Length: 143
Image 1 (cartoon, rainbow, N blue to C red):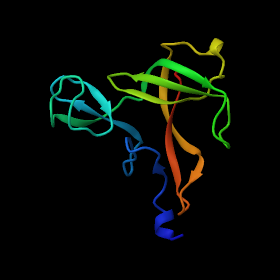
Image 2 (image 1 turned 135 degrees about the horizontal axis):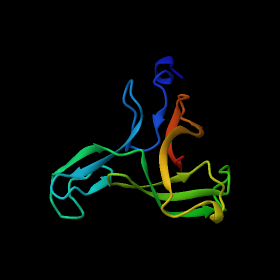
Image 3 (image 1 turned 90 degrees about the vertical axis):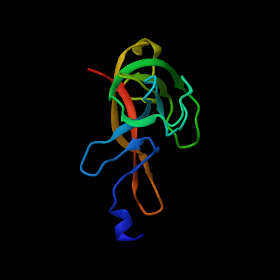
């Protein structure tokens, strides 16, 4: 492992998680200049209005509401269960799937529409071959 490669810091776990040098991490979407629809991932055509080449990068909010969730009881070996897989509608636009943390995986403790915030944390201790860790995003109830 080279010192230079290991010194670059955490790597984003998905392409739409941005890690600006000297700044806070954020999720990036693409917003249509014509109809204002927002999507994750780079694209050239708006699925809502069909406009081509009119989507520009936009920083997504770190707050939103829980749209739907599922409590996962079986997963790949090495993945701790149960955990809460969630889809969140972010304030200002954009819908994102991720894990809901810091809440008991019990339907009595989770409400549809509950306010959440996006938090950025180490991705479960995973590392690449050069020893770099990965940074991921998670959702947690907003206090």
